[in-house]
Length: 442
Image (tube, rainbow, N blue to C red; front, top):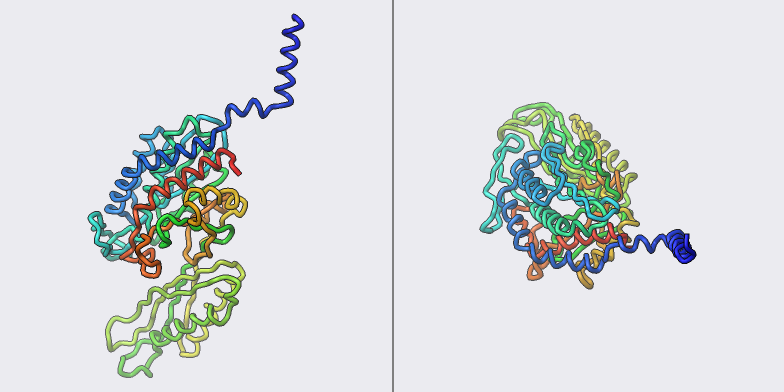
């Protein structure tokens, strides 16, 4: 081999061995260029995102019944050239977008179901839908903003698909049914999505999700660690003895006993646990008993919810509920049967992932528009994904600046209103989280 060629070969070999990063730089994405492209594309498709949101808002569907919704989403993901899996956990949709460059896998999630709420907001695209729920015909409304969540994720899918060749990794888009809970007697939601492989083939290294919340439009709230409460359904059956309403001494009144139990339950959080450690809630939201005015019934059923952010406190509250209900009933000559569902896990943001991606959220929201917020006593089954892989769940404000926050209708209200000006910010947030995570930005 000629001396000059030998020297050149040796030089190249030494460079390859000693400076391997130099070979990889040509494959590394230009993050600044990708971020700028995300923002430009998000602005470009904003009218389409608004259109998706209005259509989904006008045609809401309850949990495990999101047939039309999932069809629209699957068609959209297929139109972007993704591998799409349908009927995951009944009506869930999972799309996979493989980038043109090698890299990790990241997932984005949106929930699809609406609530049994009759809409009272005066909108041209207000829901007129009805459905059967709990044996009754009810109005159906996206009263928790899931229409926003879906439209935002559909927009993020559009943006990232257009950038496919420059993406260093793979993105999974998870559209989940029944976040608000499956119908009675059915399974559903995030837990069933996980069981049916939503996080497999390929398995993500991290997952991101958002929830619209009555902060001012465009504000982003996040926090490391415990973010949303663990949730349990509480059921108490109080058994008495039926008698004429004119002679209450002839039986045991479960209605009066239930009233005493409800009042007693309120002292558990206010007097029996250390609420300086973490917030907690015990709420009775439903009570049924009796058939007419002059008959004291033999039974009353109460249903409620328990919200906690600390496992030890949850155990204390469970014990307090049983003790309070059973002993108050016993004092009246009645009996109380208490049952609590298995707790929905705490929504827990991986601290390191949150630290790493906080700069992305702050950049998207703008100066002073993204902050660490207190934990919420609302619950989210996004927690099931976080039990499998590191996750970050954050909040996007949807209340116009002209409305004081104390006057904004809360989630689950028939007057709940979500400002569409938040939609492009949500698209930018999710898409930029993907770009920064896949690009290895610290």
